[in-house]
Length: 62
Image 1: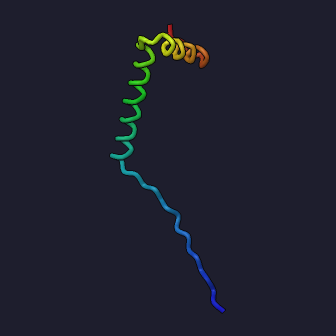
Image 2: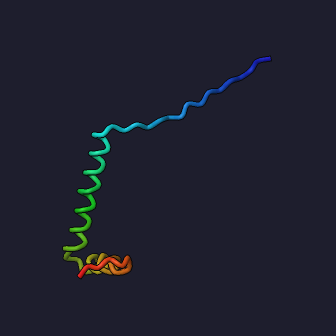
Image 3: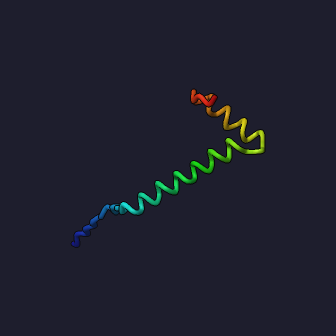
């Protein structure tokens, strides 16, 4: 008779400060680009969609 033992090690994900900072800066740059694209887009449908989304979220924009 044999006893089978299984040990489960939880994979701990540790991220360094530089990785978190890089992710935060990247997300900020992406967000800024999206806001400027939607706000200053020559395509009227994109601008209007962003404008209507701001109003539906009760965010004043003008």
